[in-house]
Amino acid sequence: MGNLGWPASAGVDLLTCVMVMGLTAWISWRVGRVSVVDVAWGLAFVAVSLALAVASGHWLSWLLALLVTIWGGRLAFHIQRRSRGHGEDPRYAALLGDAGFGTVIRKVFLVQGLAVFVVSLPLQTAAAYDVRWRWLVGAGVAVWLVGLVFESVGDAQLAAYRALPKGEKPPVMQTGLWRYTRHPNYFGDMCVWWGIWLAGALAVGWLPGLLTIIAPVAMTYFLAFATGARLLERTMMQRPGYPEYAARTSMLVPLPPRG
Image 1 (cartoon, helix red, strand yellow):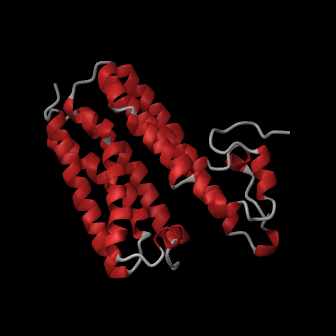
Image 2 (cartoon, rainbow, N blue to C red):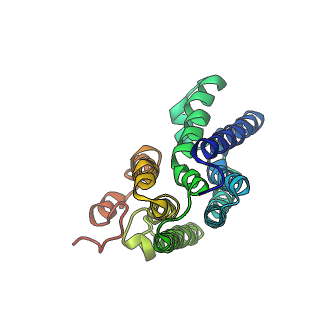
């Protein structure tokens, strides 16, 4: 058996989420920007995975901590670099309006902390139980790797597109991975967390896998409908050429372009 058990691993996870989001809320208040939570999103998972690995000493927890640290560290660095020198994210400005900081804490930091706790359920499971099917750990790592490649390559291709001189830049990015999916980075995120669920939850048994499947399902929902693709496309659909691009290109799962 693992060294913690589920109640203890859940407690470590919850305490870490509270500490990370509390610190992020304080930083947000000091700098006057709610969007710092986007950088903290990936780092919160890194903190949770490392806390659980240290508390349990379980080899699977340390493996997952490595995977999560690579993913979360890269994501946090990418978002921080992309947002440097910019003001508040328009999504948060539209969501919050003139709300006071108490409302900001409730609508942003509390919600983000709860989301991190739910999505990290497989990390809790890995810290609490022994592995039953090691081949699923390997399968999970493979799915995680596919996700990391899609996310990293998609972000790099988009950065190269944005760096083009204005006269040479097409109105819509639709080459490379973006030819097959309108959001390769979001698809990559989904694969990362389905892989972590396979390796960290389903690999320890059917029951833990079924009880924690809400974690990758929730991440998929966030990326596809809540704060990800659907929300972004409300703005993107106003860009010349984007509706035509959307009509022939899959939103998330990579597919050959339609007609």
